[in-house]
Image 1 (cartoon, rainbow, N blue to C red):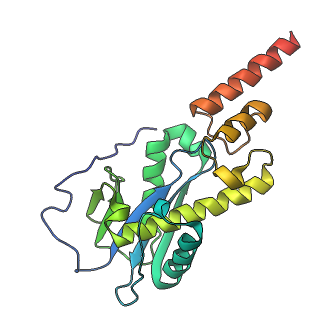
Image 2 (image 1 turned 45 degrees about the vertical axis):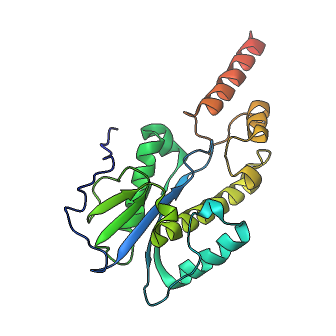
Image 3 (image 1 turned 180 degrees about the horizontal axis):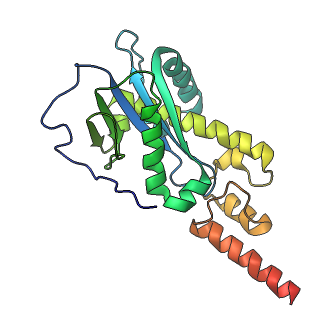
Length: 218
């Protein structure tokens, strides 16, 4: 499957400043780097009548503060989630899967934005309105910061649920990222159904176990 993913386009707004003319959605993702689990995107439209203080890059917040803000965003803004599972990531690659998850999040918003602000330097294709990619946007635009908080919290919760189903990997701690303990578990017990098989450490662990088992059979 081949999808064209536009890079940042300075003319994506067609010379228009659409802020203040209608709802603006912030979009961000969590989970591009892990060896296991989905990539989760969030789209958030903040309500000017219900401002939320302290929004920003979720990675710069403590877990306690992030969860406090998660509840405030959920209760005072319009929120939607888009997910790409590991099988899709392996099939189309992480970039295209991330763009697909972002597009799904925007499409599921209960309000129709006049502008979408996306964290990073690429835009998902076929968005329903003008869009702008903003590098480090989660620290610059409150709506993107809110999306960052939602995406990370949802993904963390999914990985904690996965840790109870797929034991031995420590997903509740590293959330699927390539920590030393995660790599050691991969080598010891192999991959589980939510591992991304196209990622090098997972592929290497699979090949190593296959080679070992083949030698034993011989």
